[in-house]
Image 1 (cartoon, rainbow, N blue to C red):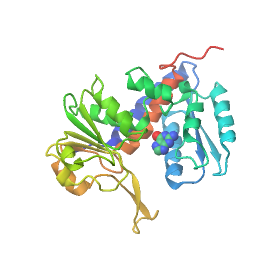
Image 2 (cartoon, rainbow, N blue to C red):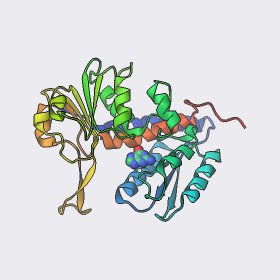
Image 3 (spheres, rainbow, N blue to C red):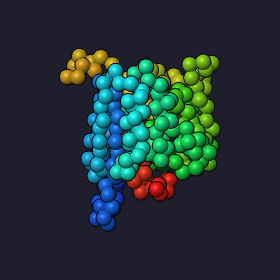
Length: 297
Ligand code: GUN
């Protein structure tokens, strides 16, 4: 069994990005600039956004954090998004999800200029990804593909089972795994809450990508000998031995599943760090206008 070390790979990629940025700056170009909008004080979102800001520093990016209280109106958010869309110094920005219930998340996502949508959530970017065009691929699916690639996990012709059908992970990663490229070219099955015979389907899988948000859902009896397991789950579970009072648990029963696998990602330290580094990569692509040409006004 080989542990897939997302922390190390993400550190390597951040170093690679920082080198590119220093060359850009030495050539007289401006530093890439990522802005993030954070609404409210959800612990998970606070941590994610703080880590994104930290990653920007490490990569040599400028970052701007714009905070709102839970009571912010949709109009106020839309106004801020319009300002960021129009700001030539901002290369890309994200609105951290989830948003409070009184805000229409889809309306917010669609208000973002797709050329600055470094989360890859805008329908234009999702559509381009679906038909294999260059685009901002959303961070978690991109991170997963990068891990499979850097560990030379064979995906061509393999059976890949994706657990979960979210817009952020399940659907896009299924789409990427079936596309004609490496990693990809897999035979993909997407399982969800209405799937029958889920255990049997998983037992056939060469690769399982678990993105349900149900701690310990994937048990050893669901896993074929030699399978590759990618665990996207990061549920906070109470842990009195930790200063924070919680620890992160993945969707996979790691201790019992790991001995059966060829490759497995730990939680934390697997997919999580890759997600943030993928956002950095998209921001660099935006700053260099590598997906969409620079706006001409
Ligand atoms: N919430 C959970 N994951 C993400 C993400 O990748 N981007 C944003 N904006 N919000 C999230």
